[in-house]
Image 1 (cartoon, one colour):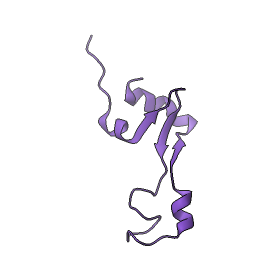
Image 2 (cartoon, one colour):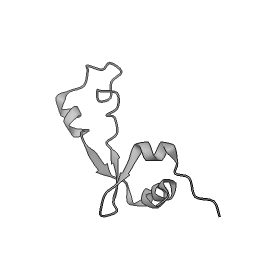
Image 3 (cartoon, one colour):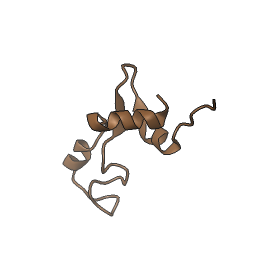
Length: 70
């Protein structure tokens, strides 16, 4: 039987911790500014609120793990 392939988009967006939790980057963070088209706008408060990683919602964990091949 062939090996399962990991979904390449999923492996870039999620990571699994040592205890098995699935983590993702906080939304509205990629552009460099929170909720804005310009990279320099958005308050410091918004930047702090969107910092770091959060756990994937419980309803989505099974789907993400399947795409990661876990």
